[in-house]
Image (cartoon, rainbow, N blue to C red):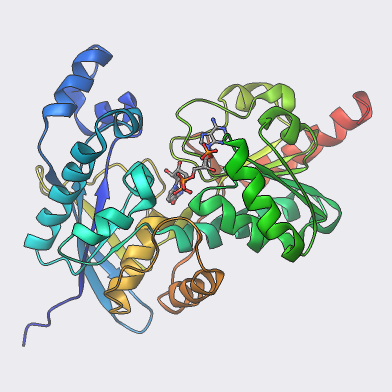
Length: 374
Ligand SMILES: NC(=O)c1ccc[n+]([C@@H]2O[C@H](COP(=O)([O-])OP(=O)(O)OC[C@H]3O[C@@H](n4cnc5c(N)ncnc54)[C@H](OP(=O)(O)O)[C@@H]3O)[C@@H](O)[C@H]2O)c1
């Protein structure tokens, strides 16, 4: 008897022109304006077939990555209704293949109201995947602190993007583990309102500022979750031996940090190890793997949340909008663990962070402390 697997789809889009060229080598060397124009015209398509995701107790799911191929800045600049239309077309493709739940990758979950409108109009339930991203991000930051011998209870943590869907929940989840938290965002009114609303309930001291650089200069721990398309974290601002957990896609941490600050531990916070023997096969070229720009068996936390919902047969719009309920984050963390998902290995700037690299980072921090007074 043929068993019907629960199915999901996940909406993907390129984060940069390099991403476009990785998927479509023919785009290499074409000017940015031409690539952008082509992307604007491109209808949604099914890019990847995902198989082999299997829980330790033998449950399986199958899914598709469906592409709404706009760059992050296009998602923010093009008319909102056009962008929603592109995302919905991609979800409809997934639904036609049998998907029972859809995840919104990167900026498809950021644009407009963080998935609320898309979920209202979509033929199947929708999640941004932010619950698992929040959990993975906070765990990654605290893992980084342990590796760098930073006592979080004595530390100041800056959350950049603190008024966002991910950032606001990270502030609340992180607060019991740190000495002080600084909330950072662009819109001063929204930031002040959020801070006034939550400060009294936070389990640590807190401040709020719109000045990213000033906040980072005060912090031993930094978590980024912004919708910025520009670098925000610069080497000149980081404290000696600081730990930075990067959730933003595209990233916020300048590549100059990798070159100029060997004493700082930067780690991508939202990567999960997928249980089973996951395969990400390109639909257009069967037999070839899709390059997620991640190590084998690794997926983003937001993708992983979508897979977990399918595996657990929770066909519901699980995480949407801002103001995420922490109880949901905790429940998702437990469901992901039950399905065999674990935090991915440490990684940054397209490379794994080995134990040797961590030891070298700690040594560089010690050396810099002896040279540069705090
Ligand atoms: N790693 C993963 O698995 C994963 C999963 C999902 C999402 N993500 C990424 O996580 C990021 C955040 O997503 P979200 O859903 O939380 O977005 P969101 O709700 O739109 O929040 C974005 C936050 O960034 C702030 N921000 C934007 N530009 C800024 C700037 N230049 N300086 C300081 N703050 C700035 C916004 O503040 P203002 O409103 O004041 O501008 C807001 O607080 C995105 O990059 C997304 O792609 C990663």
